[in-house]
Image (cartoon, rainbow, N blue to C red):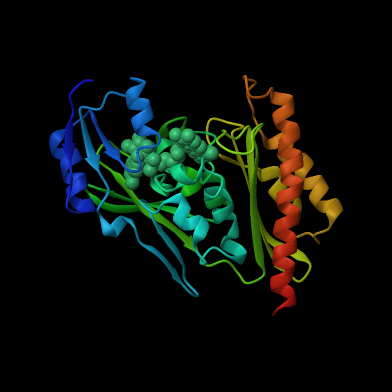
Length: 293
Ligand SMILES: Cc1cc2nc3c(=O)[nH]c(=O)nc-3n(C[C@H](O)[C@H](O)[C@H](O)COP(=O)(O)OP(=O)(O)OC[C@H]3O[C@@H](n4cnc5c(N)ncnc54)[C@H](O)[C@@H]3O)c2cc1C
């Protein structure tokens, strides 16, 4: 065991000040389900840890009807899975959070940790991007806001500066005629990492697709939008045939690698299958919204 300092800040501003004043080598500690394992394996060797527990400002989960939903960085995956706030257009976020690890892991794992760890396979990232989330960041110069699809730079790399922390994510209120879904493929049902994950969100205008976002996980160094597939569906009448076509294009949007968990062709095939399934569920959910208007 090597020595490191442990810091318990009194507020998010204090956490930022600690990072700034103590300098390089520090790490923010959330649930620790990524960081402590990486530390034990000596993949990271923090000189000090700044613990984000006990900061109620980061634990807020708040839906304002007509405006949107705030998820604080320290909100746990289990809280999202169990919260009644994640319905209809927000449902896909709970789909992703509910897949992380096991119940024990989900009781520790935070949204902020999942995003800031920036694993290409992170299960919360594609649904949040598909839902149009923005990352709200605090640093020594104050707060700033970044669309979540611009937050990731590569495996374990984000736009966060050395003294910045993620406060949480803000997701705009989805239109009532919206739906979304996230699915991943893993060889094992639980406690496994996504070979591919796909999140789809659709907003309908009658039977036309007014807006669509399709986000692919684990097929590139960061989560990626399937832009060709989105363009093919946007403005069109939605049908099973149109969804089939979009799912095939989504497979072309993927840039997967081959590794022990699956080769590139298999991953592209999975994008097509999961793309078709998630778009179909998203469409059906959105249709219920249209029918209830
Ligand atoms: C057995 C097991 C199974 C798992 N299964 C899955 C799975 O199925 N899907 C999946 O996506 N993940 C999985 N994970 C990974 C992990 O549980 C998640 O990524 C989790 O959400 C990380 O959150 P945390 O709070 O534990 O982060 P931590 O480990 O505390 O932190 C992770 C990283 O983010 C940084 N960080 C944390 N919070 C902030 C913040 N607010 N601002 C800036 N930086 C911050 C930390 O400094 C660290 O670098 C699994 C892990 C284990 C051990």
